[in-house]
Each structure stands twice: as structure tokens, then as C-alpha cells.
Image (cartoon, rainbow, N blue to C red):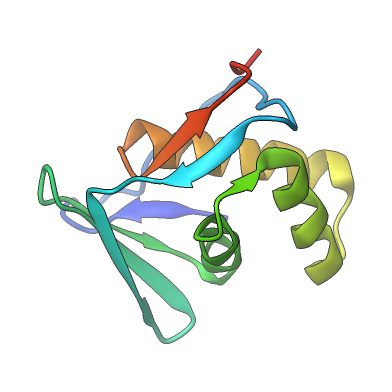
Length: 114
């Protein structure tokens, strides 16, 4: 899963991120709009005018996030769709959600990340 910032040539850099508790509620930010493009999704942060692109797997996660979902349920739903180990998926989703939150595209409510 990758999120790239299309206003600059470099993808958002991967970094070690804290885990997100299963009970954390994930809510799409109010100041964003998104649309599908082929198999990807483009998200515009209305506040700063920056836009981002998600790959097909990130798009699936984004679509589930539109329902307002707890992190543990997001992991479960993605495991139903993809043949991947739970630990790897959990790590990848935590990284994606944390990046989306850093960019102001998703809010994380409830228990704080470890």
C-alpha cells in the first residue's frame, strides 16, 4: 500500500510508525474529497490544496474507511479480501492510516497509538 503526493515527484517516505489499537475509531476528515481513477484513488486535502494517490490496495482500505470503522475491523475486512499474513497487513495498514492522518485525510479517535 502506498500513498504518494502528486504535487511533488517523490512518494511519501516510509517510516517506522507506532501501532494503532484495534479499538481506535478511524474517521475520514471533513476537509477532503476523493475520487476513483482506474484502480487508484485520488484524494484532495481541501485545507492545503495537496492531493495524494492511493494504489489499488490502498484504495480498498480507503473505501472501507469511508464507513467510519475501528482499526481492528479494517484489518479483518482486508484479510477477507487479500491473502496476506495478519501481522504484515496490520503493520501496512497502521502505516497507511498514520500517513493519512499525518496528511489530514483521516482522524484517529479513541485509544491512542502505542
